[in-house]
Image (cartoon, rainbow, N blue to C red; front, side, top):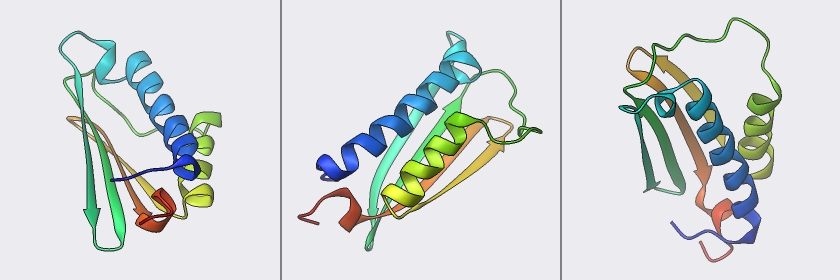
Amino acid sequence: IEIDDRSATPLALLFHELATNAAKYGALAVPEGHVELDILPSGPECLIRWREHGGPPVEAPTHEAGFGTRLMALSVERQLGGNISRDWAASGLVVSLRVPLRAMSRSA
């Protein structure tokens, strides 16, 4: 997927937040953990899927969304016009995004 300056910053913020949380609490907090990242075109959209494996057991948060969660939503929903969903699966956190290709690059 081609990206340009309008999508690079929101994507960088998103991946930084995901990686930081994975290193603190998720799959990257343990040596055997890993992350799979899929970025695929899907019609007029781009599907981005972050999947953590091999980390500590995960649980859905029971508290109000923190700054990082709000920042990710802002980046994806407002800046890129997409949507974000989270699944706290037993095997690890799965974050899925759908973003219009036109938001990723002016040439899309």
